[in-house]
Length: 221
Image (cartoon, rainbow, N blue to C red):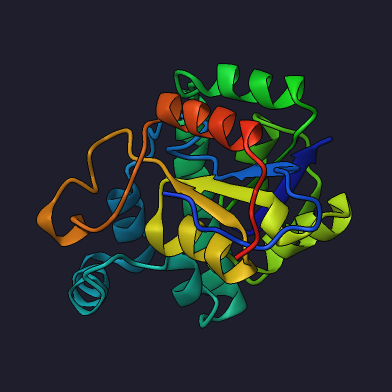
């Protein structure tokens, strides 16, 4: 499993060079596609039941499975990545585009706003969605993949929006890069009291948000 970066040609303000949005970068699972992978079952299969319970208790906010795998021997890593690939293949067989995603992308194309994709999925899953543009380590939430896209596009991070359904991966990646961020929540996962200060959107609201941003001049802060 690796971070694949692909591209076609709650907001955090950031400085821009010419006052307009020039690109939008998406997460894949739960953002542009309907989530169908049972990640907890995948983690248990990779880590083993006892290790899974131990690591989960130590990391209540979520398990970074790739971080753990990178500390293993090459043979053990290969086995782990094969398990992940098998789970993602099963998910790919049921791949569904998130309702509203097509309209959102059509709007971006109509405004000549570039589109990109950063995901932690294996390449086989990404190929079903988009052409491969590159491969990156470290993974989200490190800003390197997003900064790479900005560099290839010839734009500043403050002219780009990162859209995804994970606070700790997608939003953190965008903020660390200095980009705008939009948190999606199609399932209500951020409705609990612990996230009371978090602003999230559904993808249809995200489209309205982008239309609003595109109609305004972005002011540097």
